[in-house]
Image: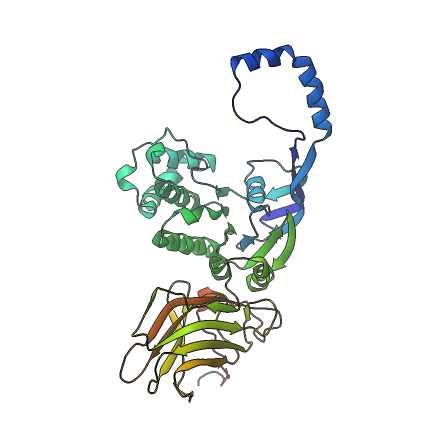
Length: 420
């Protein structure tokens, strides 16, 4: 099968001029003086151009994307993600290499891409459809669906320059997704929308992929990359650092991602807690069995808690509640098997989790402590965060995606033959 997108040794460089540049505006006297010295300035410009450097935003990027594939593109700011999508969308030309695209391309790279601010929302729908090569009849067939998805019915005949950024991106995404492009490219622009609309967008992208169309998705939200994508590529300093299953690529990216909470988290100063204060969680520490500070699917790991008891309490119970990034409680680790003297002082407790079977993605931990006489001694929401990834060493060979569920359960199958 021919790839929907073929990227062959693509590079993009920009010339960075040497020398100093004066900031601010010029007075009339300065303008006249500069005109008189124009020949001298021309000589200086030639000298400065000799000092210019080439900055490579992308260098030697090669990649094939198959029809129906959802490719996640991740990397730190400045890695070249948006530059790659602009080349694929034909907004800018590559400096080296070539790109082959098979089919119509719909892209949403930033708020307002492809929209004319003076035209109304209705007119921009038809304009974008025409740019995609669709007939008026095709656009009319999808029109009501686009407007209903975007939720801008009341403002359809208002110039889009008066739209908020949220309205802009809702209509832009609805047009890009519903006008049946063969290749759909989405940049981080979805972050502009609210949570409910982001959920609708992700559902629509999943639907588009299942229809056999190709999706390129650039995002810093690793949960969505893990949940939605069939493959991921990691860019670093304009070059491809890794390509493969989303879990493995995310695991390679995470050690340098400063937004991941790893290891020890101090809880003593948390003010957003509730309970009678007879005891307080002081810290939580996830002890990873590997140096990457992520939890690998199928591996053991330990969660250690430090608790400060203000006065002796009775039979205290502790619960470690694991939740998805959407706030759905997946599992609770109860301290039923624990026998610890809840005496005054500082105590360290550890919960051992054998063979973690959660689907890849980010998870939050809530902490709760109570006893028979008091329902709640201490409670902290979002005490820490951890990430689950699937690696090639996993005993499960098929790709694990959050769209398949939250907890993986082994099952034994047997065949009994046809029924008589």
